[in-house]
Image (cartoon, rainbow, N blue to C red; front, side):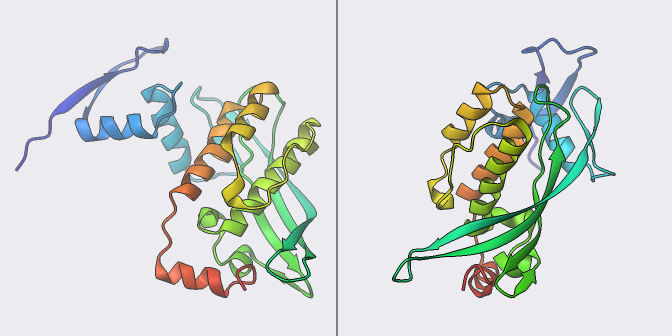
Amino acid sequence: MVSIMENNITNNLKSVPNKTTIKVSNTLRAKLAEIGNKDETFEDVIWRMIRRAEPERSGEITTNKSSVIQYKRKKEFIELATYLKDILPIRIEKTGYEYEYNVPPKKEGEWELDIKILKVYHKQKSYNPSEFFGVDNEHKHLSEEFTRIYFQLLVEIIYNEFGIPKWKYVPSADEINIMEFKAIYAKHNLSQESFINDVEDVLRNFSERKVDLKTKKQLENSVAGS
């Protein structure tokens, strides 16, 4: 059996009360460094992973400060246009989306939106997300159209909650530029937690997506893919 070398990780980049030292393998330490952001400590990365692993309980989310945000979930409905450029002459189809998200307690501080599409209304029918897009909310990054609509909703929510002008129309998922979202979050002092979870992680998953044959068939046979 190969002996695994161990590293001591001490969070000395920030002042953390009651800090201690834990032992992890070189492989795990490298992975933590890889998935961490530039301004994150190892503790920040581990807390982010813990928050994702915890099951949702009545809309409560534990933060790395051991506080609990009591989120109110808000439901909204919106019509968004889809430009069918592959069909000549170019025409526009409108589709309705019922969605929900965490209402930020206030503009300042840390929060996340956790946007979920509940129903899609298209032509004469209503669909759940997996019927319409071919995948559910947890796998939205596998669908270009789901990802596009998700970021269009994100822009809409930021406008509705904070009055920040709609700075972006999302024509396609491939054209989404993370820098534009970072600039808005920085300019208006919006939550870093939201930027990481609602923007950065979703775009990373989309850019690194790997679609197997079964999922590819689901996407092609979905309403959005047909």
